[in-house]
Length: 193
Image (tube, rainbow, N blue to C red; front, top):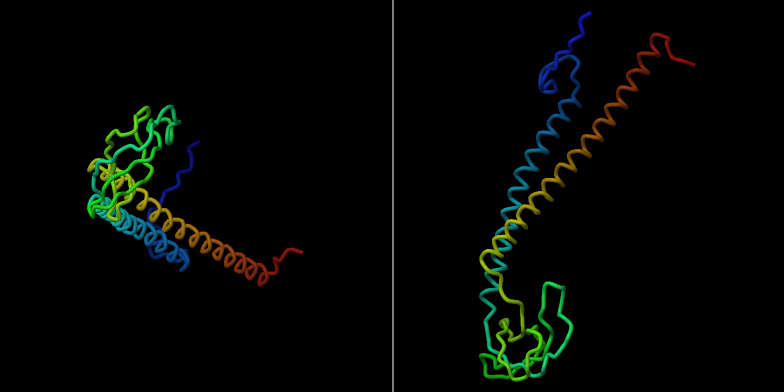
């Protein structure tokens, strides 16, 4: 006995057919628009994020300057400043700013360093200690990661919205079918009791 074959009709929502409803066509447009907006919106958001990260890194490099500071206290056996990968400890340092004023602040320095040792620190435009600016490779990594994340979030949001709209359309379709079945049953007297 031969198995029944079912021919799959591609893009049936786009073809004229007496079985195609207007809601089928609207659903097809929603899916197409969702994918198009997700791709274009994701691309635009990703490129914008890349540009924003690169601009922020450039601004950080412009504001930051490297100065030589003097360690004001022995670091001894202090605990590391942060995670296990950062071996440095917090200690008070002093330096002279571009305006000639003496500044004092806490900075991360190598452990077991004696007072009076010269340490290199980075300062911002206001003369406060800041993190070392990102290198070109770090900037590229942050820009690519941020761009991909922004593109995925934007595309996912658009596709999620299209999916919810499609669910709402399918719910309306089922309600319409239920009304039509009830109308058909009622006119022929087939309404169950």
